[in-house]
Image (cartoon, rainbow, N blue to C red; front, side, top):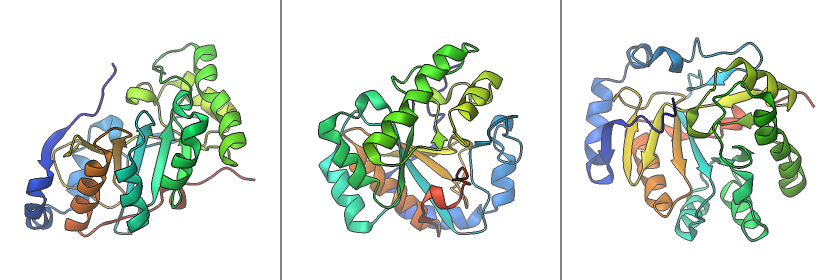
Length: 243
C-alpha cells in the first residue's frame, strides 16, 4: 500500500499559538509513543539487515526536519534556513539533482546532510532486487561524486516497503545503515502526526521541496518550539557506517 503522509490532528500556522498548552496537557512521550501504529513503533521497527527509524530514541528535547524529493528549489526556504541555521536532512531523488541545483541543496543542507531518496522515486514495495538496486545503489556513487560524501540513510518513496526483506538486504549491500521514516508531517502549511498527538522528543518531521516549503518550515519550527523542542541534525543521532 502506498501510504502518503497519514495526516491526523491537522494544525495550521494560524493555530500554532494554541499548541503550547495543549502539548503540556498531553506531553507524555510514553502515551504518545504507544499510540503509534505497530509498524511505526520505534522499539519494534527493525529489519534483519537495516534498522527502520520512525522516531529517534533520545532524552534530548529535539526533533528532526527532513525534506524529500527536490522538485522545487525555494529561495525563501533557503533564506529562512540560513537565517536560523536549521539542520536539514535532505532526502533527494537523484533525477532532481541537476547541475544548476547542486549548490542550492548544499546550502540548504549545510547544517545537516544529504541522503538517499532513490534515482526516480519509484516504489520499493517489491521483492524485485534488481529494481531496488537500480533505485538505491547509483545514488550512493552519484552523491559521493557530486556532494563529496556517500549517503548512509535512505527514505523509501511513498513510505512504501520499509520493512521488506529484499529492500533491507539490498540497502545493506549499498552501504545504507538506516532506513528513515517519519512520525509527523507538514504539507501546504498544515501540521499533523501519525496519531493526532503532539510532537515528542525524537520526532522526525517530513516536508517536501515544494513551493510552500518556506511556510512549511516555519510551521515545523514553530510547532516544535511551542512544545519545548528544537531542530537538531539527524546525523548526530543515528549511527553512521564505519569508515
